[in-house]
Length: 320
Image (tube, rainbow, N blue to C red):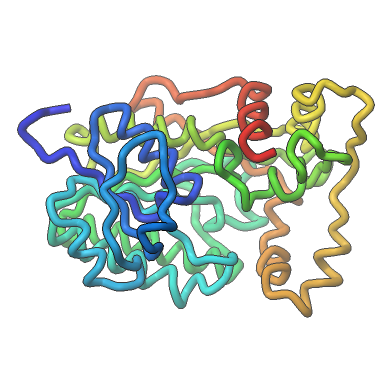
């Protein structure tokens, strides 16, 4: 890292899986990690790297602005809790990040997702593919991406956005992998397949995704002001490959693999907001969707890629 520039990275959402992973990747490159938290001092976690904790809330513009002073990076790794209130909380939090970056001159790191696509999207999407969401969360995520594009175009704020599929890996506890496919970790009784048979599904091993972010940060001076790239990750072509990997890693070929009981989601959706939000995104499990990472490769040469069984082992070891 160039010693004549600030080396502080403000992480919004450091206690979440992606925020922690990016912080860890940046710390290994010499960055000082600063984090904003609502937790009291006695309830703040201890990580493998030191954290300069700042009290505040990502929903409070003044807190984010104060925490960003002197920071060169702002990692927007925070999402509305409970898979709800995307518009009510998600948009204001991003607006606060953008305002802080505008004031501090920081570069924003933004994990983008595939919600901006729909059941009519091509099976393989690149950065030029039409973003035409048909869900409420998809429309919010599209609006968030447009906010970042506008911030870059109108105010010159540097943005590095990486679009990836479903997260899995260490510290990723609220995910389809940990809550459906391998619920219970190594003690899982029945391994589940979630995707329709033959529907390719994209997965992102979060440490690999974080490393890709860090590689882009290393090259940020050569990147466009607004940089959006796709992270290919692991593509489960059959809809069964990741479940088979779980069984291999556990080492018990007798462990059952069964289809996820979607009827539970349908029955519970009228009564449970979380299940209603989940049901809205079922199209992602019914059609094939993979990410073309050609643009990312043009920037960093090679996408970080942990072998599937090793990635699954790491996820099961930490989350189990």
